[in-house]
Length: 309
Image 1 (cartoon, rainbow, N blue to C red):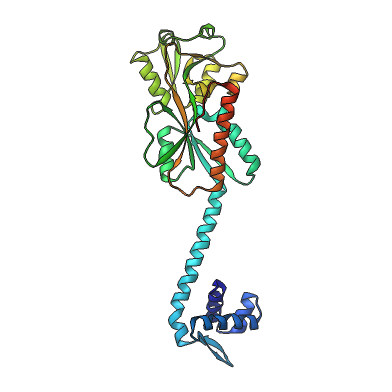
Image 2 (tube, rainbow, N blue to C red):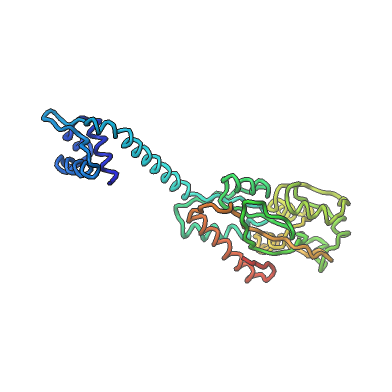
């Protein structure tokens, strides 16, 4: 049984004539008639009563008509769903904490654009909790989040570790701290500090590092990119994962630099997450692999960050 056989029967029923149905369907009347007869032979019933005045549904055909209509409606829903899947596959949505945006994400998106010219990539910078909520609810296909060693991964998400780094103090090259081999906590307390707002991993780390003590002055901002810009303008220092600073355009231009935190061995992980068990569109899988490749390249270039994916 073929779907066009059911469509032909529905057209004949609606129009009351094999001739008019053939004209609407753009097939010859003999071909239409033979298709209907083949379906009748397969089902073992006469679906049509054929008269000189035209063809109408037989009594048996009318009894089967609701089932035929149900099959055709199901096919319409299938086609609509497939069309929606195709539309969705033409966009991949990535939620990211800004600490990973420039050195990792931009080269990956550039490479993806070259191989997927019709697929849009929507990048949304936000906090980790919002990214993980979006992944769970289907609003994001992929998420880039920071973890401190020992943090739990939410149930329902699968994670690939991309980069392993350490917190560093991001400073202006003209700052006295830039001349130091490492920055102590006491030195950090004496500097204006550009801090991440509550909800960011680095806010939690700095709060723990300072053990409740307040710096001489502090700013509060959303995300690493604004923090680095403020450092480049000489407004203060900020604490970020090293992989957020190494390779950043501001670092390459000599507008910012970084120093390790003395006596600190904290590990920061950059994780690539997606919802567990989902049927993932090919475009999202390709972008996922692009992140893994770029993480390996960053490791090879800098030797500081270490992918394990």
